[in-house]
Length: 230
Image (cartoon, rainbow, N blue to C red; front, side, top):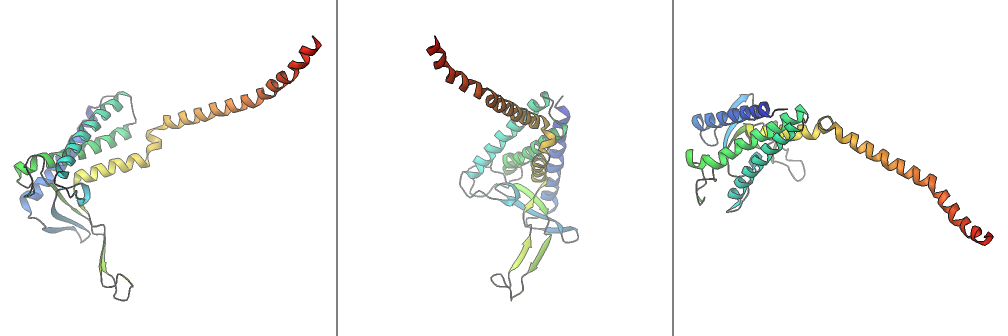
């Protein structure tokens, strides 16, 4: 199985991801929010100096470490995709790997180059290279309301379900990982066969040992009598 078509999937993810980020950067300002479908699907322009879904790593060298980790993970996933293709792995599994790879590369591009070409590195960054901030824009505030004043503990507080703002790359990684977890039995059917064969082998050995143990005991018990008769 040739891996080229799966790299093409990753490339499409990268193109869509980078196009959406650059369009948002070009036509929106930071924290601007636009309704796309009603009020539950919005575009909200944010710069994320940390990890996916708005998670941050509050450390002077955290961003550099994260970028280096992303680059290493990117090459690792690409290598594993090629290796899996040569082993004729499940096409569904390969598509998931391609989605993860495309998302990883998409965010690596932001972290590595956006600080220089979009000038969006944090002010305290020691260098603009490898300190670019990832552009996030997808926002799905599915449920939002204020708790009634009579509710103990949270009365009067604002509640928002699903507050993270993320991007196409994050979505692609999430879909790939979750799909592998959900469909792992169909992606790796041989693992069930190996486990079943192993269990059968253990059962055969146990049954064999049970059948032979009385013979061993009998031989040991009769051996002294044979010597006395001689």
